[in-house]
Image (cartoon, rainbow, N blue to C red; front, side, top):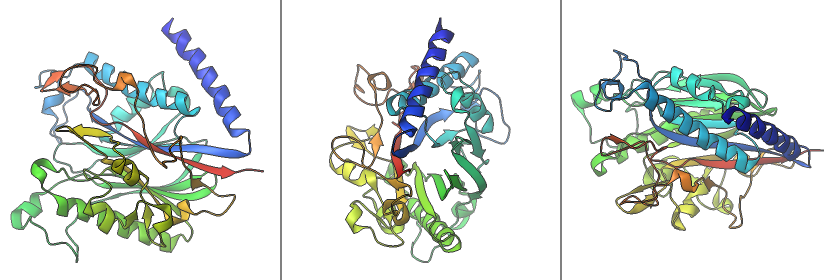
Length: 360
C-alpha cells in the first residue's frame, strides 16, 4: 500500500511540474539543508565516527540509519509537493561521506528526481562534509572544486596561533560550476566553523572571505556568471562574517556591483529562524545571491519574492518537523536529544530561494 501511495504521489507531482513549466515562466528551486549528522553505520578509521557505530555512544544501528534517511527524504519530498517541483539544486551539510548521499537519493520518496551528487571528503575533525545534489535534466555540470580553509588573510587578526593553527581542521568549501537551464552558475556550499562558547568569529569571517575572494575570481573569469552562496554559516545574516566579509546587503536596492543580496536578513529582523538556541531563533542556514542574479535582464534567471509578505527566501517548516511537546516545543524536531535517539528530522530547518525567468 505504501508503494502504491508513493507511485501515485510521484505521478501527481510530475503532472504538477509539467504544468508549472508550461506557462510563461520557468521556476526553479535552489536550497540548503543541514541534515544533522547523517552518518552511516560503518567504521572509517580516517574519521572520528565512533559515536555513530552500532556499539558507539549513539548506538547507531541500521534501523536508526534507515529511519534517518527516510526522514530526510520525507522533508525533501514535502518541499517538492509544496513547490510543485523538486529542488533543481540542493546543498547539504553534516554528511559523513558520499555513501550516505547515495543512500539518500535512492530513497523512494525522492528517487524520481534522479539527483546526482557532487562531494569531496574534507579534513574536518568530526568527519562531516558538505555536498550538493542536482537534477541532471536541469543542471549541466561543468566542474567543481573543494576549497580548503587557510589563515592567509590580510584583514583578520586571528585568536588562534602556532600549533593550534597547524592542527585546526574544518570543512572545505564546495564550489560547483555549471549551466542551469543554459545559464552559467557557480554554487558554493559551506559549513563554517562552530561558535561553541561564543567564539570563532574570526574563523567564520575568514571562511566568508575565502568564499568571496573565490567568487570574485569566478566572476572575472566568467563575466555575467550568476553566483549562489549557501550553507550553515554558524552566524546570522547580520553578523560580521556575512555583512563585512561576504559583502552582503539585506535590501535589493542597496546591492551594488560585486556585492551579494541576503534574502534572510530581513526575515531574521522580522523574527523568523531556521534553528533555535537558548530560547532565541537564529538563521544560520543562509543563501546569498550576487548582483547579476538579483538584477538579471529580462529573459534570464533572477531571484523572485515568495509568499504574501514578499520575502525573497523561505524557511520551510511543517508541524511534523517541529517538536510538539516538552521544553523544545515549537523548535526543530531533531534526531537526538541529550544523547538519546528520538527519531526526529534535523535540528535545522531547510531554507530555499526561487529562481524564475520568462519564456516565449
